[in-house]
Every structure is written in C-alpha cells, then in structure tokens.
Length: 229
Image 1 (cartoon, one colour):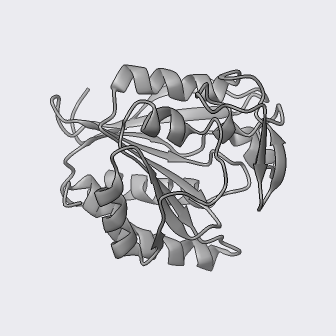
Image 2 (cartoon, rainbow, N blue to C red):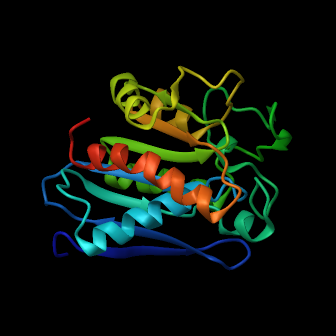
C-alpha cells in the first residue's frame, strides 16, 4: 500500500445490511497506529462528522505532518444511525458490550436511561473492534462521542487527554461520573493499557453546530496526528 493515501481496507455488513467501513492512512511502514473512532451510538452524529471532515483534509493534503498510521472508523453503528437510536439494530448499547471484568448485562446511564448490553462480545460491531485492536496493536485510540462536552480517558492517557482539553477548551475528567460497564474504554484502555481518550463534544442541533465543533476540535486532532501532543 502506498503511503499518504486513504484506503478502504475493510467493509463489514451491519445486522440491517449497512456498510461499516474501515479506512487506513499509511504514513510509514514502521509508524505506530492511531485509531480514530466515531458513532458508537447511532444518535450521536458528531464523531462521524469530525472523522469525515478529517478524511477530507487527508485527501486534500491539508492536515499537515502525520506521525501516525491511521485507522479510521467513521461510523461503527450505521443501524443506530438509520434508526436514530443509541443502540444498534439488536437494541444493544455497543459501548457496554465488551467482555470486561466489570461487564453487566444492563447499563444505566443518567442521560439515556437503561439499556441492554447483551452478552459479552456478542455484537458483530464489537467483534470487529476487538479484531482490529488485536491486528493493529494501536499505540493510541481516540473515540469520539457527544453531548457531555468533556474529555475523558482510560489507561495511560492523562497527559494526552489534558492537552486535548486545553486545545478544545473542554473540561478534563477522570471519569464521567457513572459506571461504564463493558465499555470499549475499559476493555482497551484499562485492561489492555492502550492510551485511550474519549472526546465528548457538545451535542449538535444544526449543521452550523457541527461546523463550530469541527473548528473547536480540529487543532487537537491535527496536533495529535503530528505527535505534538
């Protein structure tokens, strides 16, 4: 694969037959991998929007220096996107479905209420992320969610998270204040010690809001890609 080219390397069908696309941007054969993940929850469009805007810059060559090889999943939950639900087509919260030591079959979120977590690792979307993590062995993971307007982290990621918070103006927290059982952050960040930052943008209510969030987040994204933070 040629360096500095964005390529679709995997395409998986969701339970409702929608594409889950995985993209690579190769900066160098020996470079470490950075994962950029969006739309775990179908009713959170902000992460997908930000990653697709970043992909536009990668294609145009306007993203500046890229230190990492990038693996990008703009939309992990296209069924939830279609249905406008937090959960996937099987009514499972994908960010509570990982086989962690703290797994619980039911999650409780003060903002969205109770949701099923299914059985540990039961969903194909979860299995995809577990397989990609094992295959690429990422040095860092950035997972983008929305509504809480903060920066959270798991594993050895405090300093990186603090720099992202500084550049975005978002609040830095050690946890979101409620149990995140079976989360990807726990599975990858805590249990596998991969530095993982969860960027929680404000909720967007319009295209103008999405564009404003992009301007807020872009400097932190580019600084991360260049290795400056």
